[in-house]
Amino acid sequence: MSASTSTPRSPLSSSSFSNVNGLLPNAKKYEEINVIGTGAYGTVYKARDLLNDGHIVAMKKVKVALTEDGIPLSTVREIALLRQLEAYRHPNIVRLLDVCHGGQSMERDQQLVLFLVFEHVEQDLDSFLKRSPGPLSENRIRSMSYDILSGIDFLHSHRIVHRDLKPHNLLVTRAGRVKLADFGLAKTYDADMKLTSVVVTLWYRPPEVLLGVSYNTAVDVWSCGCVLAELHTRAPLMPGTSDSEQLHCIFRLLGRPSRFEWPDNVSILPDSFPDYPPKNLADVIPNIHPDALDLIRRMLVFDPAKRLTALDCLEHPYFTDEPLM
Image (cartoon, rainbow, N blue to C red; front, side, top):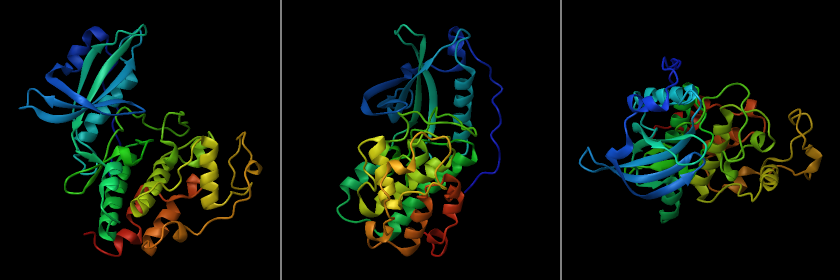
C-alpha cells in the first residue's frame, strides 16, 4: 500500500491576487446547501455542483493570509500537492474534485477565501458508531482498521502528516469502506515541527504533543491506535478534559514513564504525576482479538520512536494471518 515515489516540488511560483482567476476557478459554480461541520482548518459545507447536474459535493472553506506578493508560495505548493495526491485515486482517501477561490475576505487583514471541493460521503465514523445497533463484528473492525491505516500510510509515504485523526475526520461509505478526510492544506512535515493547540482533538492527542516537543508521523499512529480501540468499545479510550488530564489518562493506561523515557527540555517533570502502574489493555478492551490487542498496544507507546509505523501496522499478523473479508 505504501507508495515509494517522492513528491516532486511544484514549479508554480507565488501569484498575485489579481491573477488568482488564472490560477484557480471561481467557486460560484457551486451552491452551498448547509454546514456539515467545522474543524481546525475550516468550515465544511454540503453543496451542489451547478455544472454537473447538481451533483452533491462537500466544500471546505479555508482562509489564506495574503502576502505583499499575493498568494503565499507555500499555499500554491500545498494545492499542487493535493492535486498530485488525487491522481493516485487512493480508495481510502476522500477524493479531491476541485480547488477554487471565493474572492477576498472583507476583514482588515488581506485574506483569500479558498474552497476545497471533495466527494460527499454521507456519514463519519463517529455517527456510524453511534448508529450501530450493537458491537461491530471482528471482520468489520479489521476491514475498517486496515482502511484507516492504508490511508495513513499513503499520506506518510508522500510526506504528509494528517495531525487531526479522529472519528469525525474518518468517513464511512455506504459499502462500509473508510476514507480519511480533512487533511487539505495540512502542512507537509519536516523533522522538527510542533503542533499548535488547535490541532488534534484532545482525546486522540499523543503525549509528545501534550508535552510540547517535536513530532513526526508517529502522531498519526497514536491517534489511529485510539480510534482502533474505539472501534471495539464504541467509546473513547482516553476522554480527558484538559491537556493535563489527558496526560493523566495516558499514564493511568500505560503507566507513568520513567525519567529515562521522559523527553529532554520539557518543563513538566514525570514527578508531577502519580506513579501510575500500567493497566492490562485486555481489561480495558474486553473480548478483543489477541492480534488486535497486540497491534493497538504497539501503536500506543509513549516513545514515538518505538511505535509501529503505519506500514508496520499493515504488515502486522492481525491483517496478514487471515484474509480480509
